[in-house]
Image (cartoon, rainbow, N blue to C red):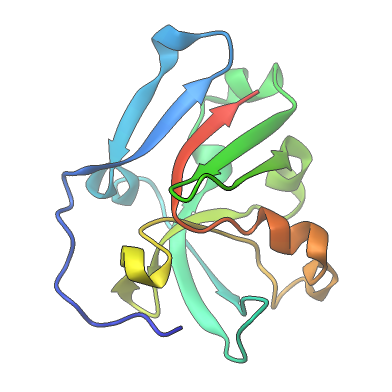
Length: 148
């Protein structure tokens, strides 16, 4: 599914909720503009049902939470707009550095293209990730990430 060169989304609209289990006071919401202020990473990846490689740009997941908070936790729970959820072990953040992508092939990802946020692993660089386990962790339409 190709990203369309449609108009840019409102960058100040909140698109992501971040939470820490058992710490409701730490919850926060981020806009695309907030995410773009963080140092970006770009990966080449082909999604399971597609036959083309895309260039994905986003924020490494390990940049979304303070390092001290990561140290006390074991995984991320990623929830999507369509009620799908996946668990990502924190070991993936160190080993493969998945990103929360907000651009695909230099375009913002619309909701109709399974955006605006997408978990992407470096599937081209690490072909061993092309398994159902990692495909299940490649969540689209990400709306909430909880540190558990």
